[in-house]
Each structure stands twice: as structure tokens, then as C-alpha cells.
Image (tube, rainbow, N blue to C red; front, side, top):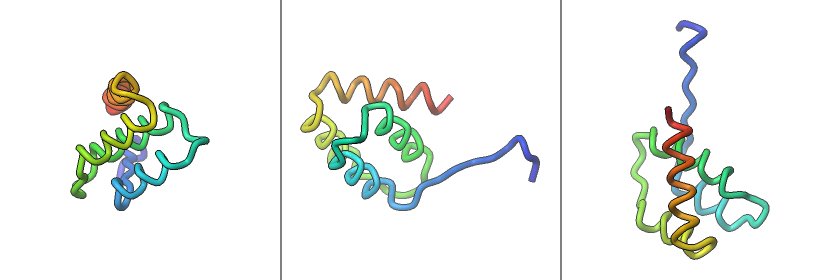
Length: 75
């Protein structure tokens, strides 16, 4: 493996995201980074459930910010 091609993945991304969302110390940026990793996993994620948890914590505009940061982090 070439040293320039390092990839990270998370196991059970939905569980991780929901646990992070329950932790009041986690910021939108923290959640966005996990969200970005979850987008790259082959694991099934119930996105409506995750998105509803984000909305419940921050609001619909908070979900938009998290998604925007996550998509930027994927690049």
C-alpha cells in the first residue's frame, strides 16, 4: 500500500453518530466529521433517524450546517 493512500472507516456509523449527538460536548464540526466518515462506509445508516437527531439537537439549519461541513470534509 502506498503511504499516500490512507483511508479511515468507522464501524456502526449510525450508533456512533447517535452517541455523539447525545454527548453535549460534541460540536457540529465533530458531528460533521463523523457524518463524512459515515457517508463513505458500506454500512447501512438510517439517515432519516440520524438527521432527525441532529434537528432535535440543533434545528433544521443546524442539520444543513452539519451536512455542508460533512460534504466539504469528504473532498
